[in-house]
Image 1 (cartoon, rainbow, N blue to C red):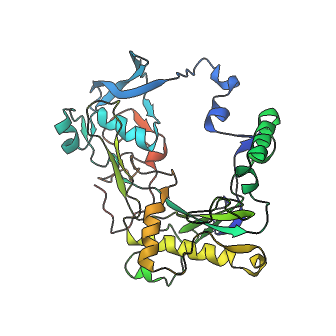
Image 2 (image 1 turned 30 degrees about the vertical axis):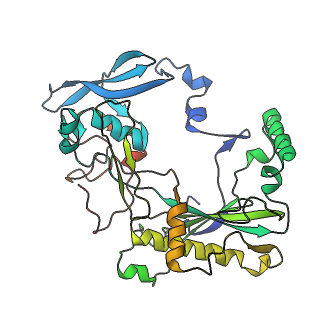
Image 3 (image 1 turned 90 degrees about the vertical axis):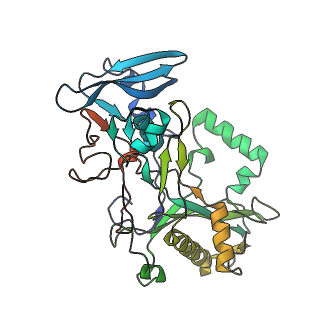
Length: 364
């Protein structure tokens, strides 16, 4: 799965330790780390903006970070540099409220432009996902827990007591990364957005549960369900994150821009075909009762409408503080993750990641 050549089907990998999810918090902020003298963790605190602007070295730089904790305002001062890791939404929000962004956005809000950097918050992208399900004639599925309150409570009590049992595992068991056929008609009008021949276009997450949309989902009169979560992992659609207020506590305006490009809709339809192909294999013929929603006997336009109305983001949002070449006029950070045009400010979260761009996509 992590070889650089992930195409194919395999067991879904998870970061689980001791029956619990091993997150960045449990891994890096556990008791033995949080007691270090050079680490201070503040709860219920929110950064509002960067402050203490100076230009002593010939390049503008910020000397502190302002934040709120409860109703009190504080400023943390930086001796060397500021490292911003607020995520794909929080980072551009903080940058813009600090005066780093498009002057045409900041000016009307009364925010002085410290650095005109129009790429901040632009060209964001997330992977659209969509679900399909099939009814089966056996009960070794998650429905045996999710549709049975007694069994659910027993499994939940088991996990609380010993961190073992069904609540340890993911809701999915296998994952497949696949490419579109090289002669797909979509490539007549769209260049291949993948990074190369070993990069998938689509993803199937196979689950022993989940009825999917439509009649029959959720354990209606059958033993159980199996399902497939479908995702386009090389989307061409782009969105944006911006602000419409000078108050840093107001939520930013997020337009994920899902499924705006024809390639993404085409790829989602192909992902559904691959899932249908998988569950129509001979090994399933005595097991599958039928799909929870008939996607085969409808028009392409009707299917596209269902996908558009049902698709959700996978929470893999990237690109809002995009990394670009050191001499590129677009982008927000250079390959060292330093914000272009500002000294001593580094971004180290997923906002710097960029899904492959093509000639039809122009960064500001």
